[in-house]
Image (tube, helix red, strand yellow):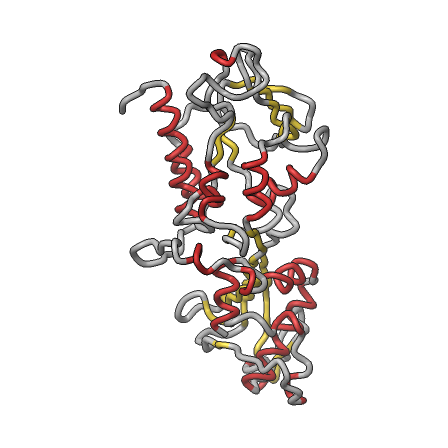
Length: 341
């Protein structure tokens, strides 16, 4: 059970792929965990409220980032709709999964032109990145118990044969808070990917089968059928039957803008790779710079910068790690332009 919980914390499908020396650098954030009313979108709206109107452009997918130019605007962004934007600096905040996909393509089809330098692409390849999904189900009764699930992998008990394989490595089925009718389960790795493929009906069947087998509760799978009436009243026995009335799941693995959930430090990698991923391009040396420019002194600094949870050495895999990385890159630019606030 603890192993399965740790899989969702780290996004590693197999815990043996985690580098435990690097894991010791991870720092827990102090304070209690909270549920944000209306979700993370409320945080985004708050942060964006101080920006001028029209600055944020939505529904525009970046297809390629051209950098390492000596021109006045050294970075050229190509969008999937064919439009182009020139910039002095670009902060890339895409997920590690998108970066991995971006460097797997050839020079013409990759996300970056020219391709990222070896120190950067090697770090991207070595770091781990997995899929974690949440499943919410609304049930027909309150005060549902918090279930912690433990299965013997070799168990052939006939009571549990019907429980689908993707339910056997979730650690809990639990209400999101006391007296809630909404239950939450976390899935990682292969099970998380399978969850994305399942229909709502298949999910309902699997969850109810699991609950029935483990608790002995009566369950009803035809969620659209209302309880029968007896003399104008709901049948008391049927009213005690557990139903699932609504299903909601995340789909991080199949989302092309994420391709997974969050990063971990895999065996063969280290915290140094997180730092390498955070390093801006081009690398500037004491002699003036690196790049294709004939006059090295004209190389523009900080053309491509990187932020996101996978660029934070001690708070990777978290939202606050991503937030801190954004502050880091903003401060890097302020320092570059000698702005003091």
